[in-house]
Image (cartoon, rainbow, N blue to C red):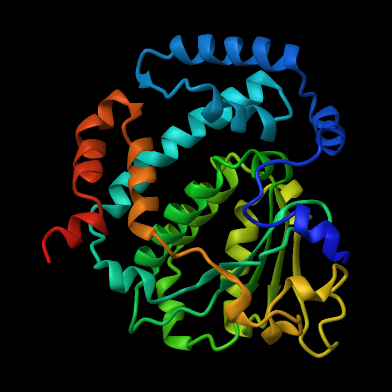
Length: 307
């Protein structure tokens, strides 16, 4: 990969040359005219849902329009799914409480400092669950906090996410954490309500015992998402994984980047949680009390105030 290109396409970048952006915008049907018309139509459709107090900020709704390729009906359904899932998350996260130090300890979601050739960001997740540090629900909360922070970047809205999940070091006692309810919560959140395109998901070092979990998850996934998930053997020198330049990945999976060179997305978790809590201001009217309780006493910052 050309280092000069890397200088223009880093993880934190929010802009590219307009000539480059024009290509992806044409692919998804975005123009000045379509933005104005589709935003107005989407806002009107949301205002018709009297049971929902939805955020109608342009920047927020634009993410849903982009992932839906400016199909307003599709974008509308994604917003509905987003708030429906938020109610489920509100219920699930009521029992989560952890100090900032504990929240930062897993360091299980990292990112390459460089974007992929398709300009998607590359997330590297540690799939092994260390129950001595966090349980699966606590860890999932951290993932929701982190993923929410990625939505506001317009390049992420346009180009999406490529992910590598490494299950090396998986402890078999963690298998009991993957209940059907938890699997449904994970899959529905990532598939039905996330306003970011998932370009590809690569799974490495998958222990045989987790095959049953994968089978349940696959049964819930759309054909489109299934076709973007790749499970790689570890006995081919990671050749099947590294169709993209290996420097974007960590050394543990035969990339050239030291882990210290990756972006730790758990930095500033307290600030990122505040961003998520702003999203809980909006939602279905029936869940307003529960959302407000979570917003005013969030799992991380709420615990910090008690220390």
